[in-house]
Length: 199
Image (cartoon, rainbow, N blue to C red; front, side, top):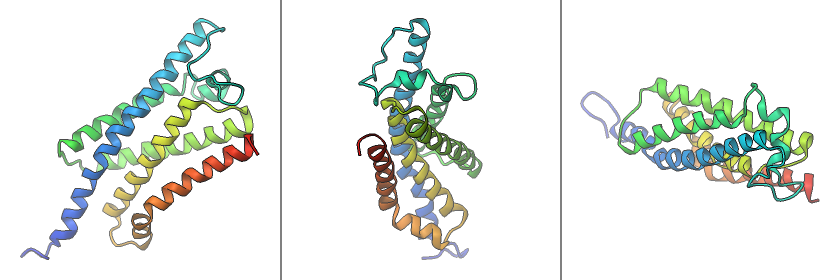
């Protein structure tokens, strides 16, 4: 259906409606990520005060936040990585709540979010590799951050690609197969963990 100006109402409405579907993911995922980042920051500060402190997520040699926190990889920029999570997830929560209030963002906001998420997704996969093959331990709270960052990245990326390149075959493939992509992504990480520590 088109308007007198030739605008496709169904298409434009669909594109505007899609960010609404992201609202819950951004808000809830942001809250979960913020909680994990806050706990990591708290445990890191406690560990700095008391070297004998045992973080809440130490469950052995493999699942051990303290093994991760004591490495240089946990402070890539000279401060705890979790501080970036506190900032990043706070922004994501804010955007999610605003979307739930039905506030439309200009595309530059989505572009800024995309840049931040690209940085985030690259950072967590670098940390996954370091955890598996360098440090040899897994941080449970870090894994929570991985678990929420991946779907947020995927669905924001799909939304942005649809808005910036409508009708593109790659975009439509991502849109149609998003659930399978997400499942395979998590399976790949789980398989890497299994074969590294339990096979």
